[in-house]
Every structure is written in C-alpha cells, then in structure tokens.
Length: 148
Image (cartoon, rainbow, N blue to C red; front, top):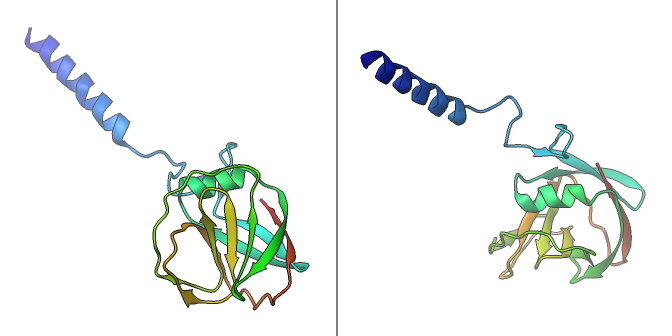
C-alpha cells in the first residue's frame, strides 16, 4: 500500500512540475503560427523603411496575422495618420495620458493610428508598438505598407 501511495505522489509531482515549466518557445514574443517569433514588422512610409517594435499583446498578435497590408492613411490634427482596418482587432484600451512620437496605436477596435508628434491626450487606445526615429510626416495623407 505504501508503494502505491508513493508512486501516486511521485506521478502527481511529475505532472504538476511538467505543466508549470516553460518551453523554449517563449510566450513573451509574438508568433506567426509557424513557430517564428516576430518582435517587429516592416513599415514603409513615403518609400522609406522603418520598423514597428511590437507590444506583447493580443492586439499586436492579431494585427501581425492580418499582414501584409497596404493602407491609405489620412492626416489628422497635425500629429497623426489614421486608417480604418477591414477587420476588428481585440482591444485592451487604456488612457496613456501622453502619446510619444512613433507610437502605433489602435483607437476603438479597427482604427490604426501612427503618431508622428508627441502630445498629451485624454483618449483611450490599445498600443500595438512603436517606430523609432519617425520623422514629422507632414500634413498630407500617406500610403503605408506594413509587412512581416
């Protein structure tokens, strides 16, 4: 009887520790479904290449699965370009209070916004990522290509 109890305890211990261990495929990164980890995507604005460093959230993961995209982004408020996506994305919006130049956000569940100036805000967004060294994009509409 003691042997059976010891075997059962050992099996429970092995199963419990096996379920809690992390695999080598990190859950902290975005996967495109083929076990390839995606931390950033390419964005082309006015024929210049940049990278969007992606957030680790469901919104960014879903967005990556929609790529590639060619988008006509409209100017708004002298600080952002926006477009409405054909599909809705999962959201986890919050009020950031301050937008940084280069932030890529989702307004609502399908409005993609690229901010090219920093400013304070009272609106709610879900953060998708950030573009380093993004220049002032001016007051014209732009065509943007985003790809893996």
